[in-house]
Image (tube, rainbow, N blue to C red):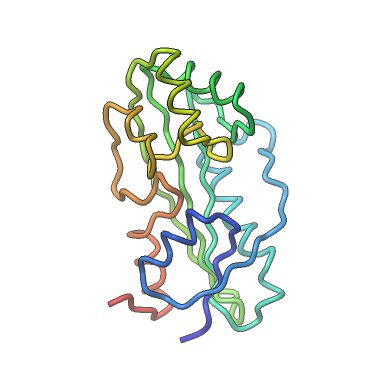
Length: 192
């Protein structure tokens, strides 16, 4: 089997990929993640996953490269990573009692043949009605300032939701493993 590279600096994606019991290394792609004018969330997620894989492809000439991207969409507007406590408060206030869609894409490239396959999973999160105190309590605990939507579903963020709709519980954390396994099979990589 060719060596595998996860094109990501995300500790969450690294932890998810470790579930598959694969040997891999990580390398952070350096790309501009800004959306194009009028770019839809699904298209942005797909484009960025491919660009991440391609960004490190020249460094690894005989590898399988895995890249992923996640874009949150609220009322058809892209939600970025909040980056600060105050921005997280604003995001969670807006999302209170609402639904948010998370588009999580995956791209796998064989760097020697340039063969690539991509897919996307959509996860819909239904937020509870949240009081300002609940928001503050949550943010003080998890500090999810590097997470789109201002929560960590793998942490206490799960308490913010009424329900989650998805084909894969890993999608919301940032790597759709069920779809990834199917894509790896196309490269003759069997997980079990």
